[in-house]
Every structure is written in structure tokens, then in C-alpha cells.
Amino acid sequence: MKARDLTDLLLLAAIWGGSFLFMRMVVPVFGPVAMAFVRVSGATLVLLPLLLLRGEAPLLRRHWRALVVVGLCNSALPFMLFGYAAYTLPAGLAAIFNAATPLCTALIAWAWLGEPLTRWRSLGLALGFAGVVGLALNKSLSASGLQAVRFDAPAALAIGACLLGTLLYGLAANFVKRHLKDQPAMVMAVGTQATASAALLLPALLTWPALNPSPRDWALAGALAVLASGLAYILYFRLMTRVGPTQASSVTFLVPVFASAWGALVLGESVTLPMLLGGAVILAGTALVLGLLPRRPRPATA
Image 1 (cartoon, rainbow, N blue to C red):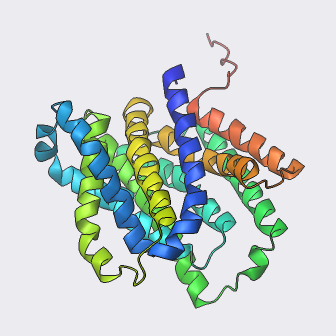
Image 2 (image 1 turned 30 degrees about the vertical axis):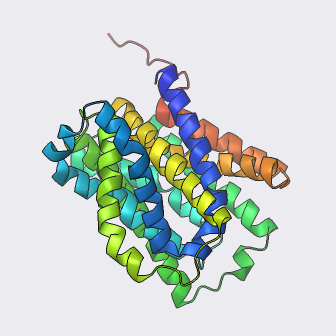
């Protein structure tokens, strides 16, 4: 991985880590469907003029079928599913399921695209996911979050929604590699957000909140649209075309680390030793997945 790709990965993790703070405040106001629509439609409005200035609009028409699939699987459906789960599950548990994205991506890449699962990459995936589980459980237990969860039918539906959303993320990442890997990141970002907007328009109108959200809520929703969907998906698709779906999706390992950091900086949340240890394990696992750690070469055989 080149320095530019690593910079994109860290910036993307920082943006999506901060987005968790916004979603906690905005989803209860808008609801999961309307919030997903505001997020993708706002990103489309911001990015579309840039695409037109770059002269890449004809590529949207040429690849519209593939962009529809990715828009549904990577934005419209997962945003609604995780938004629905946020009503029942604490953020710690949602982070665990979201961080399973690289695992799903790697397994789908192995089964569908024949991408090998090396022992180092497998170890990195296992370490990264274990670190996320430890970090999320530590935060949830310290806030008595898990104790408040009753594993009844609503909880089962919320967990199922998270698992389905994670599976869709993994499927979309590999679909991009198979059908869109040579396309500019701006084309994929605009195309997927535009198609997601079209798919969510009618459901959002039918579920629009009865009370108009406040200017503060609209500002937070706008930040989600411009940063967490607009800029973030340019970075994500650029990473995917350069380093592959599994490595790009490893950003979800880092999202809880940055979410904890933002919580400490913005909300004054305490940083504990278990949190630091969990973060270190996540970083080590991510480095293995990305091939950043030096590996001792195998001895030559005669």
C-alpha cells in the first residue's frame, strides 16, 4: 500500500468514525429511511456538479446498471438496515457487526473471484475483528449498554438487519472489483448515491417525520451527506480500485478506534487501558491485512 492510499484510509476512517456521533443524534429525529435519503441525496447534489465539470457524466449512462446494483447494496439498503438496528442495539454491538465487513468481503472474494486467503491476511482479519469486539464490549459494558439489551424478537431483527447490511457491503465491494474497477472514483460515488436517492425517494416521502427537524438536525444531516457519503465514498471507491475490496473494507476495523477518539475529544469520554489495548490489536490486524508489517521471507529451497 502506497502512502497516498494509507492517507486515504486513515482519513476515511476518521470521517466514518465521526459520523457515528452524528447518526446517534439525527436518526431518532428523521428515522432510518428519511435519514438515509437525506444522506445520499445531499451527497448527490454536492458531487454531481463536480462530475459535470470533469466531463465524466457520459460514464454514468454507460454503466448505469452496475451503478444501480452498487447503489442499492452499498448505500440505500445498508443505511436503512443499520438505522433500523440503532433503535434497539447499543452502538458497541452495531460496531461489532459493522466491523465484520472485511470478513464478509474476504470470504465473498474467495468464493466468487478466487482471491486467495493467505495466512497473514486471515490472521489480520481475525486480529482486527477481535480487537473491535474487545473495544466495543469494553465501551458497552462500561455504559451498561449490553445489560440493557433484551434478546427478544426486536433484538433478533436488529441483529439480522446488521448482518444483512454487512453482507451487502461485502457483496458490493466485490461487485465493484468485478464490474467497475476501471471506472473513476467520482463516477462510482455520484452514480451510486444518485441511484440510492432514486430508490429511497418514495419510501422517504411515506415515512417523513411529522415534525420538521430543527436547523441543528439539518446541519448534522448535511454533514453526514457531504462528508460521510460524498467525500467518504470518493475515498472508498478510490481505495477499492487501487488496493482491492478486502483491504479497502478493512477501514471498518479502524472506524471504532476513531469513534472512540472523537468521543474523547468532543464529548470528553474517558480513554481506558482496555480501549488502548483494543485499539493496538485493531491496528496490528489492519496492518497485516494491508501488508504493512514486514514479513520474514521464506528460506530458499534447492
